[in-house]
Image 1: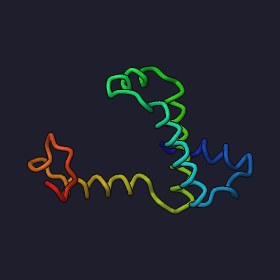
Image 2: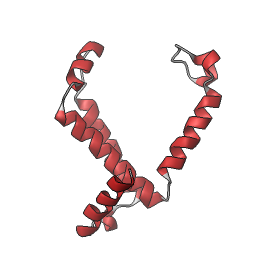
Image 3: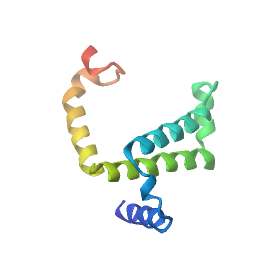
Image 4: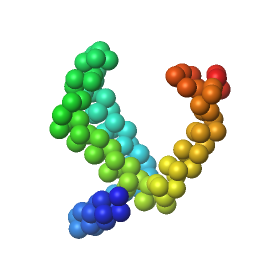
Length: 111
């Protein structure tokens, strides 16, 4: 992951784009790219969505775009992604115990 982040910084810095990377615009970019990913699945059944995803480079590109903007957002906002994810996993383990949540999609407040 460190190598990817390094490459993203180099790409951005070579083009002097950091000036455009504020939290608001990066959050908007994440949302827009997420909507572009969602568009691939509009009006598809659950089964069709699995077929749509298989070896689809356009969907892979949308996922990459989301991840790139998320990395830029975290960096601009001073968020350590690895720590944030580990903290969230720990929090979710407490909110969604295996005993209460296994096989269920309920929110933790409804378990």
